[in-house]
Image (cartoon, rainbow, N blue to C red):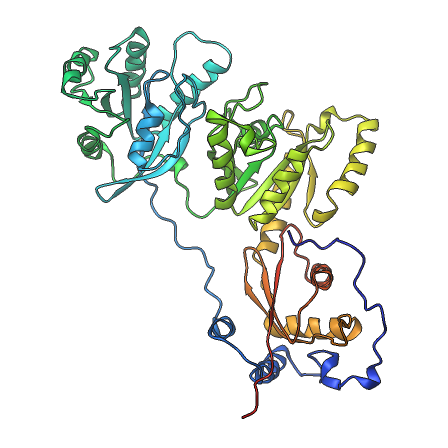
Length: 512
């Protein structure tokens, strides 16, 4: 991880006698150019004297892409998969997607929230929603899971009702049928676990549910899946009547942290509804849960994730796959809000989550949750922990919040805007080189082995995160790179965004 705060400012141990050093070795800027473009042209011309390969020229000649947002598309139709626990809903979802996305385990109740995926069949794109098992007269977490399934039905354009054909229709299945009839949504009845011709009779018995023809399917093996999806496409509209599950344009924000720090509570508070199952049991969330939330008129696409545990290899079953999906959610997001329980000491897991975010190159906001549980003694120790443990991410915005009460959650937007603006920042090449020229003139790179590397030219190769490439005559030490990064932040900001700096060492062309 590249950080701006490691070690003291690297200034040469032995002062360089500038009278004995050629003028051009004091830095790339020796003339007062009228503007940045003139400076860039002059430095580019000087760079041609050095050996450049194809990748160098491609980097130097590549223009910046138009980053304007594309026009919004119509929301895709939404298909919800519902049923009682352990009938194979998540297995069916994975079969439709053609990959293992939903967490699957041979125990009831693994899926708890409603989770959306992008799916496609016969050239038709749609949004697929996996749900937790719907049960009758349950309490606690199970009742909240059932409520999420009901919300999924309400937001869907069509529903696949999954029944275990080997068990047959149960009293719970009949209650789900009543719920589906009241919704008025088109329903495809999936008779799952029909692994061969011998199970066709079991599927036919489900005509008694009154939902039309049962579609015999084996989610485990894929048998009958095509016929069922063809029937789905006949009832799915061209676009969703409810646009909530497929927004276009909003920035993607991942809520990450160790288990039980309040990620789901914060999402529910921001959404103004019980969107995610919340329970005092650590590890309630397993699949990443997406939600479109509008804060102060600005829409954001929030992703609630499973808590990252100490080590992936220490988890098993559903928790193991949940950890892998959390890492994928970070990589798909643009910014991560790392939640830390301010009422308890910082842990290795907290630091690991922050490292994962920075290593993935994502913008970062650190939110200290449960601030309402803080006392004066704990506040003192927290400040000491931050100064000691988080010294490498002093550039990340910090906000203190209480997800339970909603205190200061409105400050999250300002922190998100700041970090994302830094993540998108581009510095003009001429201005960048002018800055580096003044920096190197005032603080030259230390002399090592009688040689002093000279910075020839620098360019910003990309944004999201900002990545800078420096062409030099010799190796630039890691300490000096951190020094450059620290001064870049002082000059241009970059609050909330990691910075990448790479060096390409090039030699002068040999005269023939």
